[in-house]
Image (cartoon, rainbow over all chains, first blue to last red; front, side, top):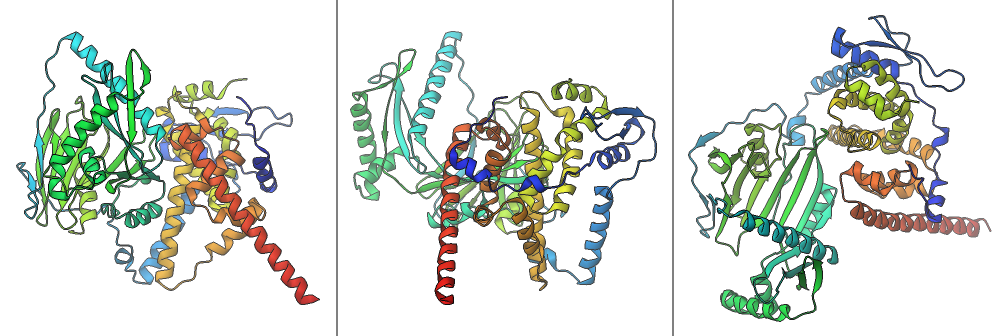
Length: 394
Length: 192
């Protein structure tokens, strides 16, 4: 392993460290005992012997079940039992209304919901709707598939390259292809604002007038907030219409014209070579409002299962469509009159989630997607419970 | 001498008693790390026991693509994060019932033992995530590659974030020093 090179400033900071005075601990005995107690006779009890005087590795002996030796402190599970009992007594003695105070849904609180056949969800005020559509992959020859794979690879390469050029909150439009004047693929790259704490995320979200994403009052145990993102608007048409000062009613037509002009203009710009005869041109777009926000909760399990919740404004949209190709089960879920669409993907499907819930908030013109990841241990009820805990309808 | 990887393979294949070697090799490193995050000796020692139990329970699913140390630190960080959240909740409950929490004052005492001034005060200005990154880099001797593995983030993003945190820390430390100088000059004036 290579030794880390510290800068002078880092070296200076290291001088403030006083951990050299911290006494060592030895938890081998209680941990091994706890393992033996917890996992029974099939697991081994180990006698732990301190390091020998020459500093050689610990002597480990496989032994039959035996009494543990003296330990410096009570094992953690015993202390935990004592702590829990004390906490319970305190809670009872003060007649705690803790449940109300924290406003959290407990892990075990059941939730009542009804399942019915799928139907689109619509906001009657704006006619915006969330619909499901099955888009089957087109049949193609091996050569066409290989070409599509190559194009997609170059598209992703271009998108990542452009994203690296952007500052947080910026967005850009790009063209990528072998011949930029004919058949170039277009795309938008954005650099979200990232947050690793919920409070900072929430404060900035309010400041930027981003879509509301209420903090879930229920999150399954073992999951913790890991990231919040605020994403700039990605509609190129409205971006171009905005930049030309078009009135809202004329946006579509003028935006489309401006879009065509932009592509023609960009096709003649000096391109960046991406290899394989592919070229890239890109243009940073003026800063705009925020279109959506996203939060991610990650489990403490080694496979790091995730829960992602995204909120998107739909004021300028008429429909949000979701592909049901590879979906095993689709239902509408009703909780206290509120409608959600529930989807469960087939294990071998191309979808990157196992379950997804969709719903909308007509007051804030916002629609929500809540999804887990493949191999997720979450049940349908847990997913519904998360969504419900964000809507305040329980 | 048998490497950690070989020992893990043996544990995964059923030689459970070798796990005590893993505890022996890592317990004090993880203890100091927990202490730096939790600022409480007793909690840190309990945390090490819990973390080691978790590691044992999950070791069969550990895959060698990630370094074992990074995997262990990731479990430790998530555990401490949960403890700190629970602590915050307890403090809220205590405040709700009108009980003054003594945890904060105890924290400061221990923190001052782990880091001397002005760093100790400057660290208080950082969020837990920022503090964790700084601790991993400067005090736990982790490379950016290892930190990225522990945090499950891109290495470049980690480097950028680290740069920003260092600037923030530097500014806080300077502010603390200036405050200290201003106080001492006022005291001198008063005494003369």
